[in-house]
Length: 190
Image (cartoon, rainbow, N blue to C red; front, side, top):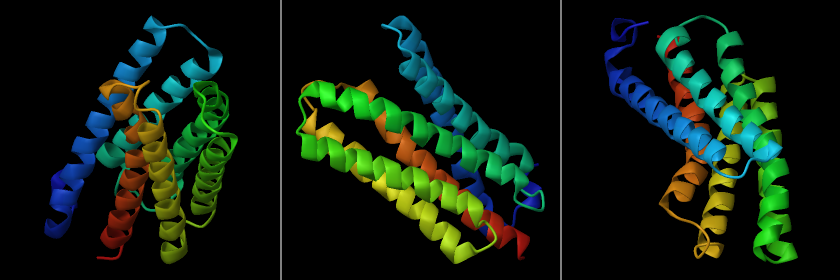
């Protein structure tokens, strides 16, 4: 696909989607490399690998399959994001408890992650219902963002810029999926 296939009003959004997808893919490659340089855990490797695959799926979708009729190629992106949220749910439940956060705060963040995961699955289940589906993915991205911001604030003495970047890239991917979904619907209806 090239920019000629996108309406004039969507070109800047299309360019933004490409740019942020490339940046997210680069960040996830960096995360993957850092994961292999540190102490390896199964959940850590899986999380970094799935994050890379989710951003790669988004990049491939935006660059090559954006205008294909139907939802099959887009559902691949949604399921990759759901897999990322699912593995992070397993990983964060274990990891954040080790940093001395209260049981209540740990439970709240895990609930945010669980609801975000469920919302992405519901989004993938109803892609033809624009308002419902966009509400699900927006809620998932915002819940994940809230959870990540709480963790960043509460664990500020344990984290650095790269951890913040990796952490915020996950909700940003959710927002990219929402934006791509809305543009996709606008493009197929013009």
